[in-house]
Length: 294
Image (cartoon, rainbow, N blue to C red):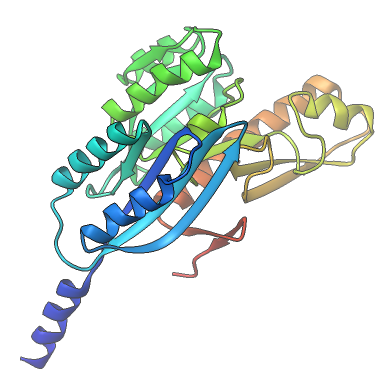
């Protein structure tokens, strides 16, 4: 009887955690408006992060609720508040057991194919819901896998991201994987998915940043070349590092041979980071990723 009471109490005391992202023009009173809303619903503020870049305000609130809360009603009411304050709001609460994944691509197929293969083999604790490309090069791969593909060919990144945001909302996306997505995401987008966008970079960051990492390493005669999976922040290639791996370089290796080795390692390293995230093994504290022991 005592054991049953303990189990019951654990269920009652389990918290509901809601992530709230607010983005819009910077002005006074926004923080108070949204924190007060959380308090009015009986919630506690667990985390608050704020950023301002060139007049753009971004805030991430993590609110916990010890009592049962109507999530649909909460979302509806906070949307009304956001409209009143002329801000954009996103809420994130993982009520489903399978996280929804969006894969962003351009034209390099290996990372995408590796993730899709893992999904087909049931190796991911998540559902690949949509593939979004900057062009249609990889659309046949998506069609073969029977996964929706959206080509956002808009060259203006802000306009492109507005369309991408709508797609991600439609599919209730929990995690975004950048599988050699060759666009730089703006703070307006990144702030909406804090520690939920994973990128792969072809070097051991912070060395050799940028798109020509392999060429820089080749020109410098590097003996070891690596790749880095990391969470995306508003600062290019400077997000919290999740996992790194490397391979040795023979002096006789050509640049093409180095690229082939690197691209293979990119795919496996990105997949490992995605799996760790989906299995809730990662925590970010003070810009560092900590791997949970259990």
